[in-house]
Image (cartoon, chains in turn cyan, blue, green, purple):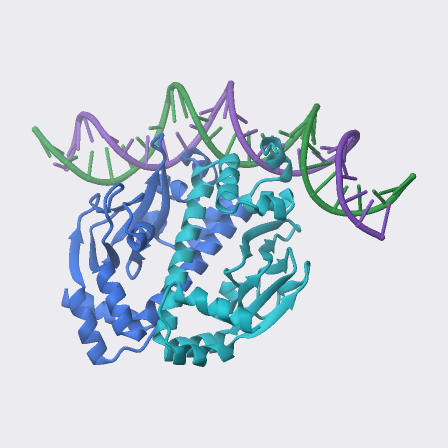
Length: 191
Length: 191
DNA sequence: CGCGCGATTGAGTAATTTCAAATCTAGTGG
DNA sequence: CCACTAGATTTGAAATTACTCAATCGCGCG
């Protein structure tokens, strides 16, 4: 836990400066969570009072169609912030599932604490502002890829952006993230 | 200009509280810009020192493939913030074009001013933090739509989300936004 | 040893694209 | 105000691409 908090402190300070007193104010509002592979961080149909910073491990967030088809929205690992941000921000029930692809550990922050801390610690508001902006930019690139590139190009971009992911997750998950059937992925992924 | 600034003040205050002195500090850092239909706000290959708040009008941001195909990333109108946020945030040259689909007016803010104002006026940092988060959520819904829905469903969702857009822009632009050919759009859009 | 999950391969099908041509429409200049 | 033209839309048909369904293969683990 203490080690995790120290990592988080470093993570935040890569983006903004935090005084010791600011950090001492913030730190107690995080709790620690440990999950095993296949356990859920967020489940469809349930409230989402928290967002999570991944200390260690690997998760996927995905949604299901009525017919049962799964679509992976994101893979997230060490240093990523994850949640169903729509449900979290707007106090709705989740439409996403987030489960662990590996044993994972998290620091947990509630919505109320986040808003309160952002009011009290401007540097933290700036931190999340910049993080959100970068998240927005990353998603925009994803949309551009979906519109411009075929599945094979998107596959190559993915393994370039997250090398090692291929070794950590079954290919069917990569297909689900890329938006193609496993069969199609299988036909052009030659390794 | 003054009228535009007043509108912006209201817009910001829908999300956060701003004192009069805070507003008086912020307001002078915006400039006013007026463009006619077909003129460009942002152009591919050029620096993007500014982001823009749309006072009035309608723009599209789009990117081009090497082969010349255009893909519309966003339609933006009154009250929207637009820019090539990737280029703007990371001081890169633009990969996007943004042009006016109607005569439009804007309030202009530079990157340096934004960062400086967010440091000095925490409420503004919170404003942009929340705006970014909502933008992220909206984009995520777009990605989900692209993965889950066929073009016809995406079309219906679009005209539901932005009614009136159909009357304001040629259908080929809607097709470009949706990620289908105009011919395909034509075959299911019956009005 | 065999079960089960994941990956691959094949064949047929569905959806969308591309190319081409015809039709319609709105804005411009005379 | 009208005629004209460029742009926008529609329609048809062929070609492409990815999907689904089905069968098989491969491998790790109990």
